[in-house]
Length: 335
Image 1: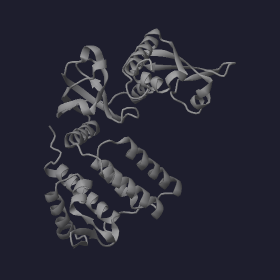
Image 2 (image 1 turned 120 degrees about the vertical axis):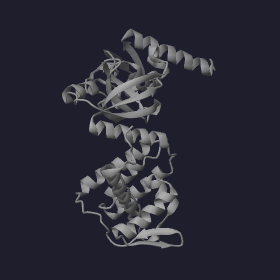
Image 3 (image 1 turned 180 degrees about the horizontal axis):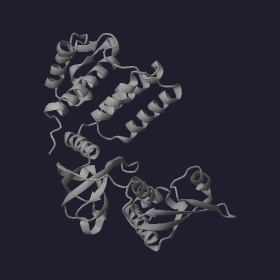
Image 4 (image 1 turned 45 degrees about the horizontal axis):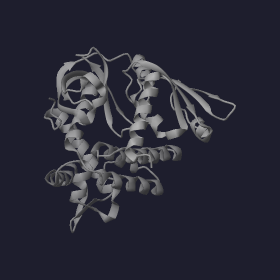
């Protein structure tokens, strides 16, 4: 496994990046300062490491770090290079921060560090809003194993290195229910809007095909020194476009739905899939079509519309939705 703490040049880069995060946390709290526990949480290190970094910032880097009754801060514009954003670009940063805050169910120090850097160049009202967003993120639970896996996967992806891990599939994956060892070329990391989870998309050497892996289900991850050639970018993009959300490695099917007049206008307000087509009926209902990879992900979306949608095709999806609705009705009884 590649050492994420590292020796040599990698270790120096990681240490400098951590110093930058600490400085960003100190600057974001201004004159009021910040307690050591919050610094450690925001940066994703222990209290002991946070103390050492604060001391190193002052002794090695020369930053004007101060400590007043347990609260730490920094004076001046220490080592933060300017980044010019238009007001529209700044607003895009704020919206991205809010979206990630709503999406993430775990605290990610790398994500927080990115927004801390961008926060430095925002106008005061937007900066305060991003800071409140970071406070919300910091209140989320921290998963050290998940963060370590993401860190290793990002490095493997960037350096085009093979990864091996033990994978525990979900029940709906049928024949692959039992945990298995996987050897994968990491092509991409993608967040899911439906599941609020992060997924690895890569070439599975054992299956000899592109596969999708939920990072939370990955165990015993290691990064190999073995490298691989990059994939065909256009082909990978076409595969992703076939997915309803994340899973693009399933057979493509045509899905046909009929939406009731009550929700037809709402359905037409968004493009739910790049292949979709819609046709309005005289009674106000809406005929909706799209070609997607598999039916598991789109099934969850269909169920969200309740009685205002009917699956016309494919027959297997119609039967699956009907079974789910009957089971749901049985939970509540006839009353």
